[in-house]
Structures are given as structure tokens and as C-alpha cells.
Length: 304
Image (cartoon, rainbow, N blue to C red; front, side, top):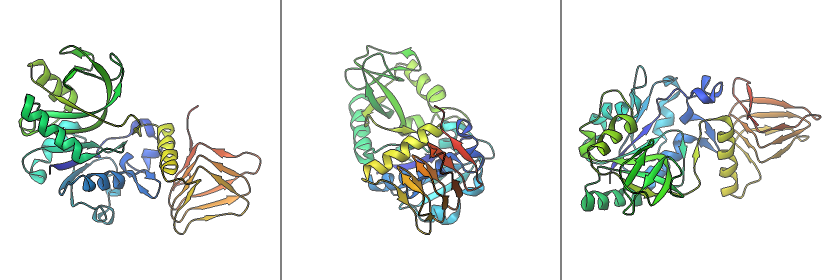
């Protein structure tokens, strides 16, 4: 099975001020950080070795957190983000040779990692595809990727490389083969600096049909939507973590209250996320809706 890398060095600009406290991959989602959900899926797909890059708020990636992952992870520090391609290049020593599953650390999706790797092996053997991108289906002409009749990439970032049979959205999870890994720049982007030049040379990239529902946790609204889906998938009205307390007068609906948090007052908490250790007072006259409460006491509401 391929090794894997979780890209976790981004700045998370669109999520500020949340990312002034935590890097995006460490945002609390349900009962644990987002990155822990990703590590679990990689392990379930057969990945036995992984790397993770960090840069922004690097000290937040604690040893205890990484040690709890179900797959051994080597953590690599970048003094400034090297980019998606540069981060993978920098991890060569940690990952060894062969194919690598590359997963953006702000993406939540129920993806069959083993099936993705198997599809890449088939596409590489049949058509010499150097990478396989997980793509959520859309009609032809729509989305960030155009897909040809044999599942090959024929459109990327507006450039066309063949006849399009279907469209789709690249979901930020892909398998990168050895041929492309040898071409990685020390700084740069996988799409702009690696995939597009490869396609311009007339070479092949493959796609894998990803689930249509996925979350790019890049804004507070997207973060709250991902949390709501986590609850829905488990049939939960709300989730209150260990050691958390909710005052009797507070009605909690569609919300996640993290471990050790305190919700006080006599109102309603609806569609919210309260981070572990946070404290919030709910006003009886004004329900708190679609908001994230941080450990440092910030209340960040989703844009309407």
C-alpha cells in the first residue's frame, strides 16, 4: 500500500480569526480534530506510513495528538509553507519511494483510500497515468476538472487537453506516482507547477470517482456545515464531549460542545461548535446560532 502525506502547513486565511488560534487541520470536528479523521481513513485504507507538514502555529501539533493517530506519522516543519508540491518534495526521506496518497488537511470526505490506490495502479498500467485525482462528479463543462471518456483529465484550471465527457470537482485527495515525484519542485503547487506542465507535454493523469458530498473546510460556514453532517451521519441531535457542562436552562440543538467546555445561561444553542475548554453564556432573548466559540472566547458567526 502507498504511503501518505497530509498537507497541514497552510495559513487558513479565509478562516480567520479561528486560525489565529488553531491551524485548519486541527479544528475540532465532532469528537476530535479534523486531522484525526483523515488519519483514520488513511489507516482504514491500508496506509502504514505517513508524513505531515506543519508551519502555521506549528507548536499546536503536539506529540500526544500525533501519537494517538492509528498510523505512524513523521512530522516535518516548514519555516514557511513550501506549497503542496514543495511539501511533498520535502517529505521524500520520510515517505520512501513509490506512490503517495496526498490529502489536503482541510478536506473532509468519506473516501475509499484502498480503491483510489487500486484505480491508480490500473490507470498507470493501462495508460501510463502518473497521478490519479479524486474527483466528485458534475455535468460536462462544470467544476474544476474535465474528464474524458476513459477517465483521464482533459481540463484543468481552464486549459483543455482533450474531449470532455464529464465534469467534476477535484476534492484535494490524489495519488502521486514515482515519475511525477521525481519532478517535484522544492517550492510550488501540485496543480500549477506539476500537473499542468505534465498535461501540456501530452502525458496522462487519471481520475477516480469520489463521493458527491464532501467538505472543503475553508470558511466558518463550511466548517459548521461539516459539523452538522458529522452529527447527521451518526443520528445525533447534538454531541457533548467528556467533562463538558451545559446549564439546565440551555437548549442545545444541532451543536457540538467539546470536551471540558461550559455552556451557561438560559437560552438556545443552535447549529454551533463550542471548542474544547471554551466557555459561553447564552442569552435567553437571543439564541446563539451558526457560530463557533473558541477556547479564547471568540464568537465567530457564519456569514449569511
